[in-house]
Each structure stands twice: as C-alpha cells, then as structure tokens.
Image (tube, rainbow, N blue to C red; front, side, top):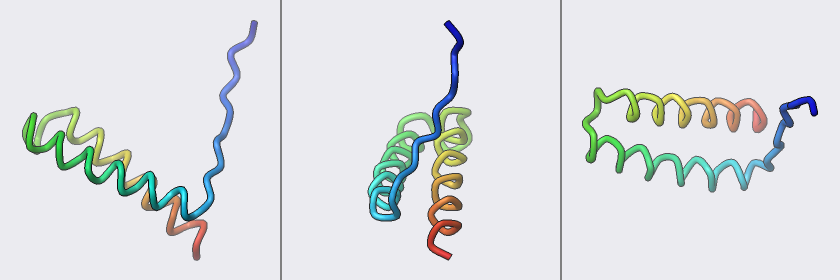
Length: 59
C-alpha cells in the first residue's frame, strides 16, 4: 500500500483552540527542559506555524 499524506483543514475557531493547546505545551516544555532545548524549539516552531496559518486564513 502507498503511504499518502492527508491535509487536515481546521476552521479558525478550531485553530485558535489548537494554538492555545500548543502555547500551554510550549510553556511546559520550556519549564521542563529549558528554553534552548531542541524539544522546546521544535514546539515553538510548531506554534509559530499554526499562528501563521491562522493569520493566513483570517486575513
């Protein structure tokens, strides 16, 4: 079987909920592992991506 990626589309209100979840997760990661840890940086980049997507779909 072929492995195909599916694009998940979220409504703006769902994006905001997910952004809030990611924000809390980022804070937890920073406090647990430090702000320069690779896991914290990856969580920050993921949050940045979804904030950008939210801004793009609501512009």
